[in-house]
Each structure stands twice: as C-alpha cells, then as structure tokens.
Length: 631
Image 1 (cartoon, rainbow, N blue to C red):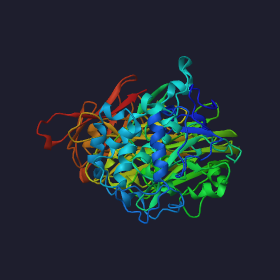
Image 2: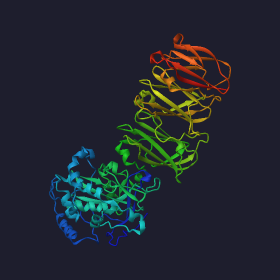
Image 3: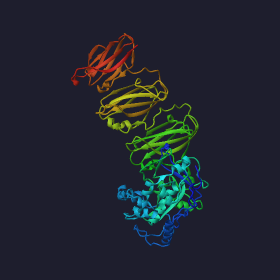
Image 4: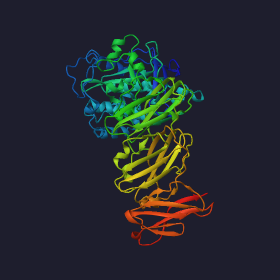
C-alpha cells in the first residue's frame, strides 16, 4: 500500500512515505510503515526542513543550530545543553540492558503522572510542550520518558488518511501539523519525538529502514532495492544511543479503527531485540546504516530478511525458538517446531495453520509440552502446499493468547497414511490448573498416548480423591461421548479405560470438580493414537459419579449391553461400599472387599441397574453406580 509523498497540501520536504498499519485481525499489535527514498537529513546535525514550518519554529531551529556547534567535554546526565553533532556521539554497540536503565516501571510514576496532566495551553507549540513535559525531569532519561509518553499516548494513527476513508487525505507529517491534528503515520510520530527532544536539548535522530509489522510477508526477500517502510528514533542517554518507536507503542488498528494500548515495549528497547523487526537502512551507505543497529557484530540484510519475526510477547515471556530461526520452513511429511520458556512457564499455548487462501488446517497441528518449559508444535500437512503457521501463548490469567511468531511452511511431500488430529486449539496434556482438582504433577508428564490394540488403560495419579467425568472423541467425530471410556478411582490414582474401534487419533477429555464447586471444568486433554484397532469393541456400562466416590472397581461384565433373561456373573470390589443391589437383589460385601455373584437379567428393552450403599453415610439409602442395557 503506497501513497508516495504525503497527500496533505503541505508535504514534508524529501519525505515520501509509504505506510502500512497493523490490524489485530492478525492478532498483532504492531504498526508497520514505510518511507521511500528518504535520506537521514534529520541526523543529529540537521533538523529536517518542512514547508509547513511556522516562523516561531524556524527561529527556534536557528537557535538550535547555533547551539549545535558547541562541543561538550562531558556526557553527564545533567540538564545543561549538550552538543548534538554526530561526531560527538558516534553510534556504538550498547553496553547497558534496558533493565539496567529502568529497574522498575514505578521509577517513572511521577513523570507519567505529570505527562497525563498536560494542559491544553502547553500544547500550542513544540517549544511550549517540551518546556512543560520536562519541567520535573531530574535527568535526561526522565526527559526522554516524558516526551515518549506524551507522543505515544496522544498521537493517533492516521487510519482515515491511510485507508482513504471517505476520500480523506493523508495528514501532514510536519511536527507542528502533527501536534495540531494529533494524528499521523510513523514519520509524523518520529519527527515530533525528534523535535521535542531537540527542544529539550536531548541528542536524537530519526532513523528510517525496514520493519516487520503488518504487511510483512515471510519468505518475500527484503533487498536494498526494496523501499524502506518505517521510521523510528534513536536518543542519546547514559552515554549511549538507545532506540525508541513511539508508533508501535501507540496502539493498534482493528478494521478501520485505531485502538490504544498501554505498551512500552519499544521504549529504549535492547538493540539485540529491536533488530528482530527493525533494520535501519540509509539508501546511500549500508555500513553507516548497520552502525545504527547498535549491536556487534551487526546483522546483514539477508539475515534480517530470512529470519522469523518474533513478536514482542515472545520477548516479554523470555521465549527462545530453538529449532527454527528462519521464517520459511521446508517440510517433508512433518516438522516439529520447538521453543523454550527461559523464565516463567506459559499458562497455555496454541497454533493455527492456514493455507494462503485462509482455509484452516488446524487438524494438522498438535501442541504439547515436552518438558517442564519446552514446547513442541508438530505439523503434519495432508497435502503439499504453502501454509502460514501462527503460534500463540500467554503467561497470565487472561483468556486470550498473544501472538508469538509466524512461520511459512513449504510442504513438499506428505504421508498419505497419516490421520488428522482432533481439532483442538491450545496445549494438549494437563491444563494449567490440574493441581487445583487434586491431580498429581505426574499427569503433566505426557500428552500423547498410543495403542496397538484399540484398548488402553491410563493411570492418573492424584494427591486427593477427584470428582471427574470423561469424554472420548475420534478426530472424525468431534462430539464424542462417554460410551467407550470408563473411569475407576483407586487409592492413589484415577484409572481410565479406553476402547477404540477406528484407526487414527482420539481426543480424551477429563473434566473435574473442585471441592466447593457446582460445575465440572476441563482439567486434562490427551491425544491418543490408535495404530491398530484389534476388533470391534462394545461400549462400557454407563458409570455414575457415585461409583468413583465409592471407589468401585467393575471387573465384569464390562459391556453396556447384556443378553435378556440370562444368568450373568458380576465381579466387583470397593473399600467404601458395603452393600450392592443389582436389580432387586441385595448382596453384602464379601472377602477382600469383593462381590462375586450371579444375576439373571430382565427382559429385553429394560435396564439393569447396580446401586450401592455405605454404612458410613448414615442414611442407609442406595445410590446409582452402573446401568446396563438389556437386548
């Protein structure tokens, strides 16, 4: 999307910009803009000239240009005027981390509060605004914070001009015009920040280059022939240059509407993180451009172009994508993308797979936690082609997941015998709150089980007895039911018996209830691969929750359907239930807490129910345990 120079009647001199913006349809709160054939005339020695400049601003620039010839022998953090010449402060790799400079966000509470109270009278001109913002600042860092805070919190992205909504023209990027309209694209954000810094006597630059925001297409090469598409700033503080992007911290666009957010990820960002999605490029000199990466050794453009654009939340969550660093992944049959949480573990993570037309292929994706903080995304496309793989996650209590990274999957060959996974967005295995339901940590050790016969027994250890319900669904039948699974509660574990009659993948869901809760919530979700169903299995008897509470074990019969008017042998055990009633006959518990009894089934079409009673309940009433269908 390009517009050449600004469509405003007072275009910025030598600043032809082409801008694209982020829509959170892409679940990414970044902006991405572009400037074309833009030199860095607004380096630390020159202020950009604008045809729309006011006399007051012109005079102020003349005053600044006189000061800029001065040489300062000190680069302390005082508020005295210091030189702005690039020769005084050449770009060098940063020594400090952002965490060294900003040890806690509360250090800016007073400054941020002052900025939030900016009166309208202080916004009549750039000199007046800079004067007000920096009044309480004790050092250069606080000045920069005040200016950044005001620009990123008060300038809206020019969505109407960008999309030409209703014939709207692009607003001017001239700093004074941006101050008046409170709306612009990236160039306006960057230049307003620059001029406010100059007024506050803070060395600053506007830098143009390539950014990987909305509109960036992984796999499409970025070369020196590609138009630059973004602008941001560098400021000199604590004896080194640091990087700032007010546009990307201002908010995001949803459809045709700009939405603010309170982020500050791109405020003095560490350069080794900033280079992930910002590549400075002066069309005339790559060597000089690379210096403004502020890292050693600098990245080359080819590396930047090929690398995956890691989203900001991946850095905030301290994630490392260890298996694949390039954006394009060539796949033969399948691939596993691995990443690790180097700090706090993720609460949840999930992935979407779509082809280039947007068709979902989420049934080709399986996400699991391999170890405590290592996550694996398995992709098994069912047909060759090109896909977008988007990975999401979060660490907090929020329901939404944040975008972490996007890959392009180039699938060359597929395994025609492979079956699709059941559709499930999120992490397979134990949910984040399994322990709250009484399950032991061992239930989180694996997410995938396999069966070579069609039958499977899964043991789920618990720290206290659990109240649970289950559901089993084949990948081709998303509804599922409880007919082919039966749960029993032992002394220290929940036993889940599973029967499968189809080849392929199944989804096993375990719902559990907390002690004082009235509802069952999802606690565990496992994937089962049935490699070879041995025979056509019958459904299990219907099991009531009271059978779990009574720690009942049903040895036989284990089929839901029983023949009519036939003697059937029942073998059961329990350490809690004293008396059973099968049909209309009662049976007392025998040796070793067991029952071995014969029962004649009723007529076809009726049900045969098993009830139980415990002397510990005090009431003496029977409760339902199992139900059989009579055929």
